[in-house]
Image (cartoon, rainbow, N blue to C red; front, side):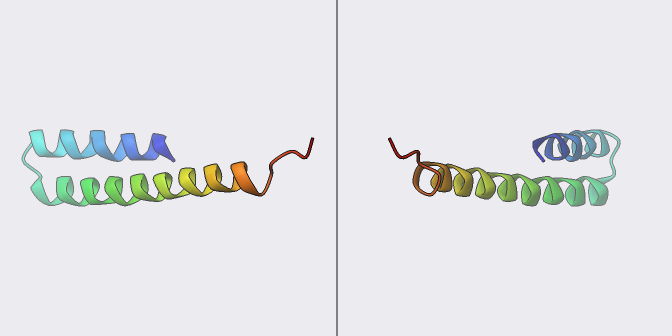
Length: 57
């Protein structure tokens, strides 16, 4: 998922260099949404990993 964020970020940078501001803004907003979804999944995984799947020794 982080790979897709970087791909859209690079597309946004290249589009802004060539003056395609609409495409650049769209790609940047998609990259931002995917990045926040990635962060939410990381936090959920950390919380579940430390509580639900804690080994019983």
